[in-house]
Image 1 (tube, rainbow, N blue to C red):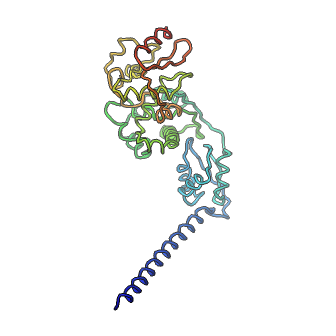
Image 2 (image 1 turned 180 degrees about the horizontal axis):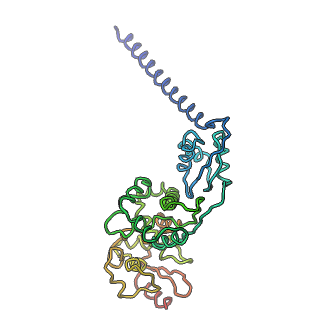
Length: 359
């Protein structure tokens, strides 16, 4: 075979291989297209039977998709997730719905956004921002038949926490089980209003709803968290300090900058709420003696963040922990009378403001 014939043969082989690859790719693309088209259609177009579907508070598109798939309302939960993201659908409302397998995705989305629920909530309670786990447990105890001590015992049980870590890997990690931590779920139970359509939900159901809500809030910032290589546990810990220090007139992003700036230059955070958490007390003013308490949470004694959050922070504080302001401040204080927060770069400036505004 001469070189010209050999070249022709090679070109033919290349053409055949290229055509084969194109056909395989086209076939695979067509198969994917048909699969998605099928998943978007009603499960049973002629089945008008209404099924009861409960969407928990704080559910993500992924969570809703899984619930709908398990109930036989849609074919594939993950298709629902990407469909609503593609169409930029938001504002889904928690509640108990009546849905049928004959509904298409647009009909289902409309129902979930209008919030036409089957029945009114039988139990509702609100967890304000900045509460510690023991205070949250008090609220649950007042609204249910659960015993406070038994609830804390369950929430501190390592075996139970291990199950939750597997269930909510996007927010919970083995860090919450480190030896110095007071309560593994401290800072992870999101402050919000919770509604239940069963008059006596289980404690597991209550905790699940609160963790789902935390997961939903964190998911909003997952791209920023990933790009900045931040740790969820550290974010919630920092957010809890910001929440405890911030007044109504405070710029949480500036407070966050002070804490981060101090960490960057090796200064202790020296935030009074960590002292009170160490003492297990609620006091209007921290004494010099209090500052000496020996605890891994006392930021007058340790460098960096305490082992875990000291309270449940709201979304504003969480966002500030992720996106602190860019400042040179190393100090801040809230004026006794007005609550206005003043910032300074040096100790001399700080002491001058302290003499003027702290009475």
